[in-house]
Amino acid sequence: MARVNNPIVDPTRLGPVGQFLAFFRLHWSRGKAGRDTPEWVTLLAYRAWLVAFGFKVLGSSWDVSWHFKWLRDDLAPPHLLNTVGTVMVIVLVVLHSFTGFAVHKRALRLMQAGIVVFLIAAPLDVINHRINGLDLTAWSPSHLLLYIGTVLMLAGAIDGWLGMGRRGFVLAALFFFLLEDVWFPAGQQEYGVLELESWLRGTPYAEPELLRFAAQQINRPVDLEALQHFALPIPSWVYPAWGIVAVGLVLALARKAMGRAWTATLIAGAYVAYRGIIWPLLVGTGFPPSAVPFWLVFTGLAVDIAFLLPVRPLTGAALVTALGGLALYGQSLVLAAPPVDYWALPIAFVVLAALWASGRPLAQRLGRSRAPEPVAVQAG
Image (tube, rainbow, N blue to C red; front, side, top):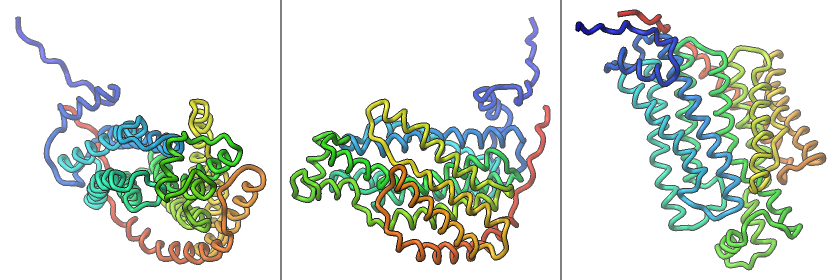
């Protein structure tokens, strides 16, 4: 009998796995960044980016709570979950690099740089823990390199998606992940303040082994000084300053890139909602709670209001500082919040205004570079 060849199936009618296989069958070829890309391939690639960072965010959220309960473990489940996302990102960057699809040159360089920084930081972090034992702060050099690597990966994905002439949900989701990564080190204070309170009540969340280990590192018994060193080693001015400057910049960039009203509020609200959803999941499974940063929603609101007003860097920085600072103070009265040195707010205002102003020409420059528009898939 003569063999009948199956007709080419429209990839847009397939599921994610089918599309992934169809990509290799129809379009697997070497090319330079910026080549014409079928629309379905672009969507497949960036949806995969969202899934990858979904794994990374879930892993990181679990990880910080894990380390306020138990001693560090390289093969802890949160690390493995985060590793799944990292491996997916590495695969995506390899595919972008080989085929040149769905990415332009600058975006690809950012992705590649992010992978390099992250892969350098990961073993350095392991070595750091092998030498120094428990790492008592989320702000250590090896941790900061991990955050920077992730920022570069996300910057590449954001630039690549914009380069395809796209915005919408995918762009908003990428900025959500960027906000989570930038804010992640502040979790040290948000978990630490409740950890210290639990010890003062006589029912610490941390296991005795972890508390003894942390105290031994500074040659102390398990006392108040040891607990403060373990739970809240970061100066109290860092938390509000980081919230005003770093979060304000990320949300201003998101509002500018999205080009839609109330984008910053929605992204900040989505992050706070996410923290509110995982809070009972973690606590319900025996992990320590955190002080959810509800006040960040007001920094997003301030950014959105600023985009309706003139003299944006000054008014924006003033609004973010004022609304954010008042909301943080209100949260500390009504709910729970880390210790705060409010004298840092005027300095944060000056820094945010300067960075916001200097970022405007950079945003305009980035906006001028665009890759070719995606093309429709062609049969045959």
